[in-house]
Image (cartoon, rainbow, N blue to C red; front, side, top):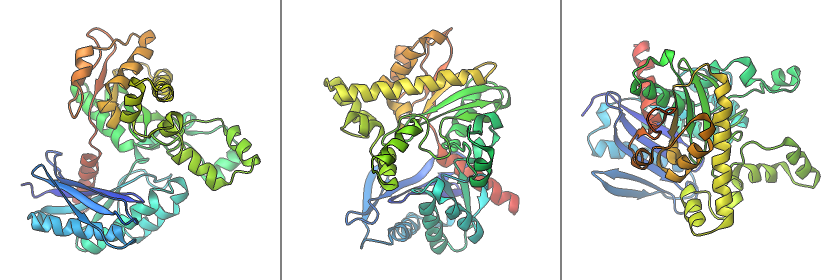
Length: 399
């Protein structure tokens, strides 16, 4: 077993994902999930030697601490605790304050909490996870890796909204993006696959999942991305609406809607769930579509069409394009979605390799475009590995 394991924590408002990452191989020695926090059914589950185990949390609060305490006990039981060198946290929104990985201290936690308006479901929960981890591992350093950091290289023309400069400056309104850790990882892996330095390559990275975004990466740097001031913008998602005419919001407010109801509608009741009327899960939508459900078919078409439109629009940002990369839960596994997006991009010369597309699923990477046509590929993301690597790099730099 490696003596350089990093405990990677992704703490959400009602859940907590964790993984012990080997910083040499990128493999997860152990991974698990705490879910249904603040509900009677709250539980932490993990797999050991292929066998799923779980631990029921008690009460209706304090579940982040309980979950991390159970993780500590688990790694101790498995003889892994002494191999953990540091803890890395995924943080959704760093605003303009954070453009790289930082050591976690009281000021950093306060700054992350101060940015909660930009990611209200995520940032407060990240700090809960940090405080719980600090209590459980008092001798270990902790580091925060920000989803927004990779996008800090965007030029002004890409991140500027066309509203008054005064308002933008007063409230720090700009495009921030998200999924940066995923886009960073897959574009670097893609460069290796085509034997080209990442600093001399250009890709369009398509992260499709319950959250979804497209990012155009030129010479290894993000130069535009579909998520905006918050992760609500851009593509249609599981329960998020993506791009929407702002006048619709004004219209609903005039009709008596409260800001709270409006927020819930856009963030929790829209996307796959809203259009299909059935589920936020792409798999369920496709099953219903194949069974003849009209609204499910519409949800599938809206999702695929928007993704293809973003990919096409981002070609104008590049002088050349080395490839399109599909990643994320849907991007890595949904054959129908990838097939439809490829079909919609036919005017640009994309042609699906049927066998390649069918093979690149369930953890398998591969090329899904025909030979001698523009390149499209699937690369499974590994955000945890990036978080582990960057945490250890900063730890070593400080030593």
